[in-house]
Amino acid sequence: MQNIRIGTLVNGGTADKIIPQIIPHGFESFALTFWQSTGTTDLYELAKRVRATVDEHNIPISAIGVFGNPLTGAGDNADTLASWERLIDAAEAFGTKLINGFTGRMPGSIDESMPRFAEVFGELAKRAESRGVRLAFENCDMGGTWSHGDWNVAHNPTAWEMMFNAVPSDSIGLQWEPCHQMVSLIDPIPQLRKWVGKIFNVHGKDATIAWDIVKEYGIHGPREFVWHRTPGFGDTNWTDIISILRQAGYAGSIDIEGWHDPVYKNELEMTGQVHGLNYLKRCRGGDFVPNPIG
Image 1: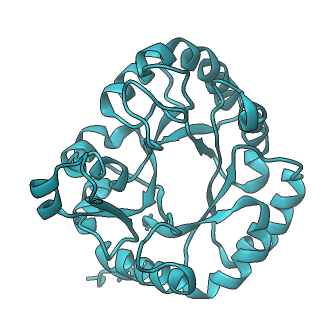
Image 2: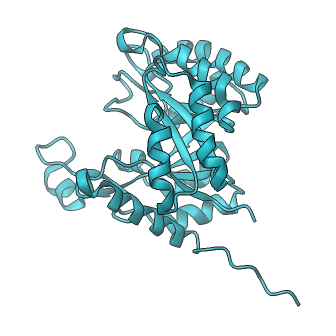
């Protein structure tokens, strides 16, 4: 039976050291992430070391990604585009068919970013297609709006329509999570129903919205009104999310994105992540139980 695996994100540079320590907790997939650049990492040697562990436990690498701005290539993002190319080429070594990250964006509005997006990801999509790989964009705003931002176009559904029209490829889609929509006060459930066919991977991250603060102070006042949360501690109905994914035939994973929860952090990080892992397993119905044979 094809199940939706529940996994977690791991820093790419130290994945071979971290994964053996957390496998016993019951994670079923791992997504490797790099910040802005893969740097001097020998991806093929890393893949060899990582797969020596995960293959033994039949645990897949669900995705590998680089999170920077490949459109400008400025400053610390100078290597981001080349890192996308290297990860696409190395995907097979990791046993994955999914590369993910931010789209990047140009100075100014999202509209002004689209020509450069089409240029860069038109070529990357061709590279991915030739290798049987898909590309997924995380839906994080990184503090940006429609008018301004430094990191990512793909945080609003109107932008998604523009992106997929600009690069009409079946090899590009979304790495979606409800949290990044909730921080903009978007209801993730109807959005998921509409866009599920373009969702290639799901990040397991939730949010808590303090509606009492929103109603009293608004969203531009001095009080925080929303917090990123580990699944099981936020407002999202993950049973509904998993049901919608299953009804649509989703066969990917839900990989917990930790290191954001304001309560389950520091020495409580893995306590929160393992709670989220077990919570999401319950939301998908628990362990698989075969039907009786009549």
